Image 1 (cartoon, helix red, strand yellow):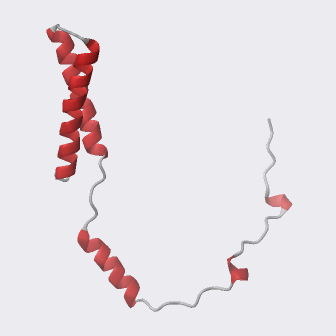
Image 2 (cartoon, one colour):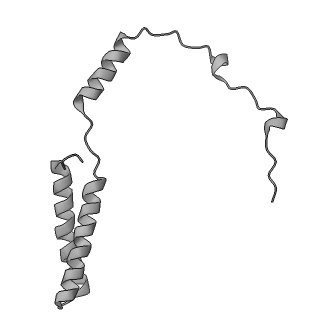
Length: 98
């Protein structure tokens, strides 16, 4: 598993802190069990946010693809008539039965 990036750590941490404060203020809980449940929910939410932050693309992969496309000979574009698909025959369509 790749190491988390700085953005993932920052978003996850901010989510945990803000969601914990918001849930504690909204629920007005005073019991230890309530605080523990809110803390667990905030940690789960922070983990979810951190995992959904997109990972940066590798720098070498983009350069290699650009170099390969620049080295490949360019083919002439196809005429417009060649790009239009053929119409489907009526026999090729499947009837819908309800």
